[in-house]
Image 1 (tube, rainbow, N blue to C red):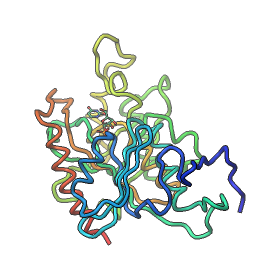
Image 2: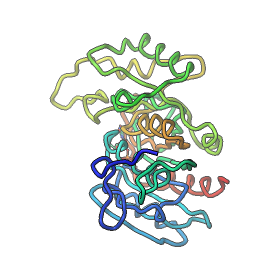
Image 3: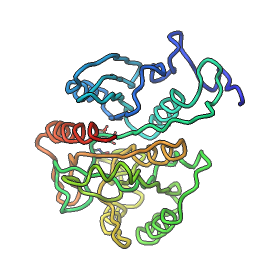
Image 4: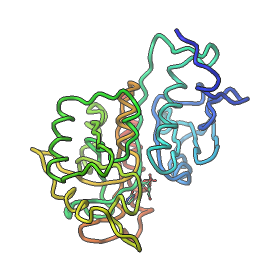
Length: 292
Ligand code: R1P
Ligand code: URA
């Protein structure tokens, strides 16, 4: 196996990966990712025990057990650029030998579940409800830097998306990656399902106008009206497509669950978004603990 150079995989003086500051033995096989670093304390508050807590930049983490299941919760901060770091470093912790700097011959698959917040794009997916993303549709560009192959189903859905929304060449080419069906089946009751669009920003890329005009003012409404067979766009946020795309390339099982804090059709905002997220965390932790 080829040795990975010091410049490519940065290991700190603790023997931990540079950005997330975790060592292999400090990572559990089940990983919860959250955007907000403060949400790590909210999730780990439910743990029976916490064996390690780390913090470096926006990457706050805690590893412990919940109802006996070993779980790591880690914050990514906002955006797919941060997901590039978190997913690659999580994978390196299990699939690269940090002593020899060589890829391990036997690979380990992590279960990676995002617990985040999102905006709903459907009138019947109200604020404070939860969405399980069946697919991440990326308008963010990250996966184009990797040799990423889409399945036939993904290519077909994407073509429909481009045609129906007239998603123009002034933007980066969109990409699509499905969630882990294996994980999704544990999160049916209580969850809306649909495609999650991942945006490269919160304002213009999500159609919000404060003082700046938009290149394509009808884009978000076109997302709401998109449909292909049983598929429609449920929501948008800023990380899911990269988690699904990189997760699949690296051989991990990924699912993104998001609490709706804003509904962009009814123009409503959750009066207590924090409570909606806490409810999601409580529900998801019990379901995660029950996964074999
Ligand atoms: C924007 O406010 C942030 O909230 C959503 C978006 O994806 C973006 O990261 O998720 P988190 O609440 O998990 O950060
Ligand atoms: N996060 C987003 O990215 N968008 C929203 O509207 C709400 C949360």
